[in-house]
Length: 272
Image (tube, rainbow, N blue to C red):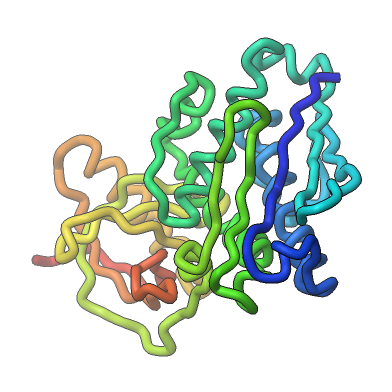
């Protein structure tokens, strides 16, 4: 087994006395367990995303006894030798932390770019890997913040042995995973598809008005003909021919008011 060890440390509030509310702590650790399982499975299985986060092919995650005098959980990820070898036993830990930091940072709206070749390849995929990972991680990472909901002074840090902080969560990052969906459908959004996964219905659209790319997910109401338009738009955008579409969407917003994604309810070829 290739062993990766790290700590999840809680600071301020009751954590300074070496304790946390039992329910809040259990919800937080369950969120971390799901997020770590989703991320680790994707790492070891060529980017496959399992949204439930209750099973990993090729590894197990263990929790070790807490240390006295603090509220700190010791975590061990045990990766099967054959699976670790497929990435490279000498670099699998670096790749693991790189993927955790990139995918979790994107979900929490923090700045970070992948550093390892393996994770850069996942970023460069035509399929919108990071958009699917963000959607899968949002609820687990919101759960991981649970103690911060009760005490906004609290911080939670995932620490790598001998190196230090990988991810730090606080009241600000909680807002990034506290989401709400517009009740009304918005029309008049024009743009072209830059990435799209036919199977998941998740992709990215360049919004001409906002002048930036926004993740999207198609609603069940979208017809097969409309789905074909999404593919048409992506291919034409890549070929430099525009591929413009008009969308009707609901916006998913963070507590900061930032657009997290569009839920596409209707799409037609643009006439403008």
